[in-house]
Image (tube, rainbow, N blue to C red; front, side):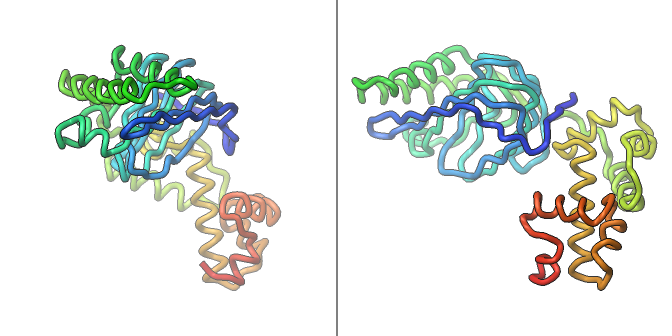
Length: 284
């Protein structure tokens, strides 16, 4: 599955956040977004994300490897557990409803059992859980929201998710398309030719795959397009040379695969927030 994401897009177009009342408040956010790649910081909540509009191809990782799936409206993204960095790549415009469910609410309603098992590993559909999330959203927006009703809905949501998790696995992890030896060969090809123009055709040839298959495997492995990965490698090499060599900036730019010094300066400033001169003067 190819997930094509425009680089450095400002992805949130409209955001509205509401907060419920009750013994354990919930926070809900509805947003429209363009294609994007986003790290969601770890928190003390379970993060539910319900697709409302737009079918997307998504990549996601909770620090244990990238998975990918098609997510249509009415489908939940995998639930992000507490204390976990969630990384997502989404390829098309979409509207989602995100709900932050406090850990305490799950422990209380689930009789001390934490987590939702397979619901953390892949997208899933549950009409009851979706309807409860939409009801909580509308109730939280109401100026006359009823605390008892919200508490009951929260309990019902945890029960619905617990039941869904027990029905059947939703694991979407695919068999790795790159063996460790093959991935090492691809990385070696990139490092050996970093100062030269690198193409998908060259890397696919090194892997022994057709280009389409290679792109699918590469995105599944890294969560990014080959050009993004190569750019990251070039930035790393430029930074290392700035810190460890006495080469001039123009020489470092060419040795790292940038077209010229200005191109390197712009790339380092954009991705590291520092110019080559500042990196060399200030160290790592």
